Image 1 (cartoon, rainbow, N blue to C red):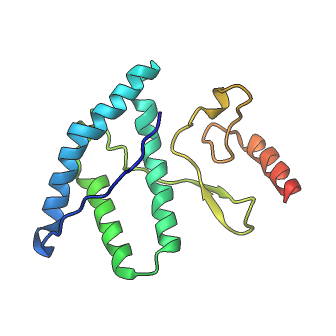
Image 2 (cartoon, one colour; image 1 turned 30 degrees about the vertical axis):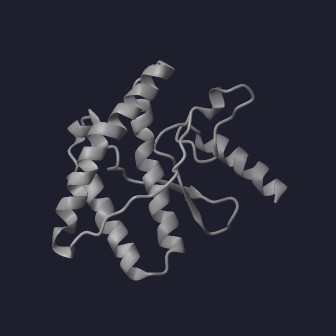
Length: 160
């Protein structure tokens, strides 16, 4: 299952009303779209929705890092980070039917075997790709033991 964004809709928001309007829009979106979608996907897969929600923290963390590394306009970075804090700190966990907001996550890191001296964010939860036929755990899988990660690192370095 997947999705495709066909078009973007936006509206201009007066500066002084920005925070409250964004928060209200997100709450409506989470209540009527995101939470029902996550729960429907979990039900169809026969798993608990927590397995899906747990992945949100790591994914948004990786997105934040990507934007920080690739966006040069300071005002865009500030707006993104301000809105991220709204999402992670101001949205009630009850809207996600959770005890904790899934976007509130502390990122852990590991060495990047592809770029010496750089770090990669570990996922917040396993994507279970290794359960597929011929699947294996990702280098950034939180279930990977350090010795297994080191083996993967050596294999990656051997191919570079």
